Image: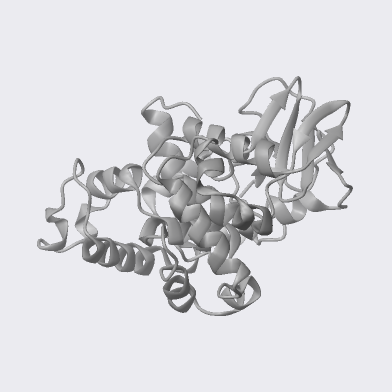
Length: 301
């Protein structure tokens, strides 16, 4: 199997939201760092061989050497992962159709707050909210002569008033942001501990936090807490399960409608079934399926 890597489609796949293109370079916010990569190609679908990344240059400010290996999970055994998942017809098709798409490893606190903001809205609005929060509560950084803002610290969000949060356009999520920040500052959310423990135990801890439900918890677990077996289920994944995987579910489990919200119990049943099917790399499968469903629907990133 030829293994490719394309950071551009990876950052434009609904995983991380604070990226901005300027010329042939992309700038991203990663906690209190600004990270950047520049490409020598003009076609978004272009890829490079996994072992030869001279077509892409990586930078950061303040400098963090080798950040790309961490963020783009270049330390994963991607050949083994894709080979395993290629046993599934849809995922195999998607791997071939979108070579170079990678799962990304995010800064945990930024990821948690990002997906709390992601409830019941679209990617463009998520990006806008996070940019506003960063500009109001983050720190200004000048990189390549351009102005950027770091992601707000937990302390700064904890000190923010509800009205200040509302001014960033987060709406009802202000209460959840405030509660989450307080929960973390109070020592009730240990990131290192969550990374060490098993999926179900870590998810149980996240679900104790106001504003975090099943889908948001699964996104956080997958994208920042090393739970590659997490499988977030949103409307796009529901459509895929109905269209391509209905045979996995028995008659009673398959009665949910794609136009309706699923219940907590339905989510648990669907999650357990699909995670059992895809196994320890369920999260990679989810990202490929999610990307495929949005692309064929012509949705913008």
